[in-house]
Image 1: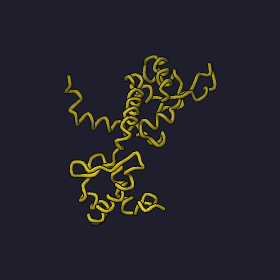
Image 2: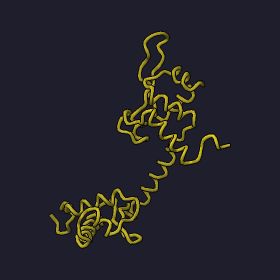
Image 3: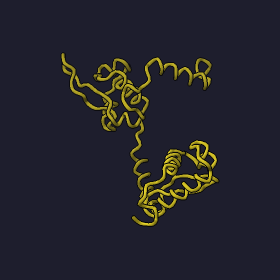
Image 4: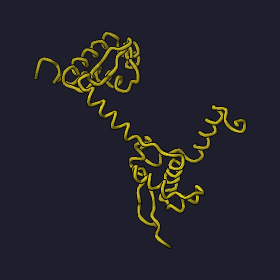
Amino acid sequence: MSGSGIDRPLSPIARSVEAVLFVATQPVGLREISSVTGVAEEQISRALEEITVRYRNCHGLCLMNIAGGWVMATSPEQEEVVSNFRDVALTQRIRLSKAALESLAVVAYAQPVTRSEIEEIRGVRCERVLETLLRHGLVRVAGRRKGSGTPLLYRTTDSFLSIFGLGAISDLPTLEEMQEILLSIDESTGGGDDEP
């Protein structure tokens, strides 16, 4: 084991501080870290030093003191690869039309569902929209409905769950909950009959 401390596990306090900084969206000060961990500021300072040493030379992350607080950030040496990843992620961002979103919602709530059932609910044809959703990996063909013509059945995918931050399709709000959400949005934005 080396004397640098790199080979030893982080102390329990340092692990707690690391976890707080990992999820923080802006710099976090000593007082705030102390408050949420229930540990004295002096111990937090030592934990921050421990984390700084750990991340100094052997990680893609580093600890930085910015604007009076601490943040976890990517190491400056990783700037090029992080920039390349951002560029790729931006080009892969999925942009869907209103028609595609409506069709996706129908699939999500009525699955497994056929194209004709989606068209009946939406009142318009949707074969091109379904092609788009299939191409983006948001829906998949899930077999055929038994009976006349044996039409294809569509279901949402794991990519759909991931993009919308769902653990399972059952995590979707119910239709009643959606109506309440839309009503509260309408009320908070002053929408409704008064709008032109």
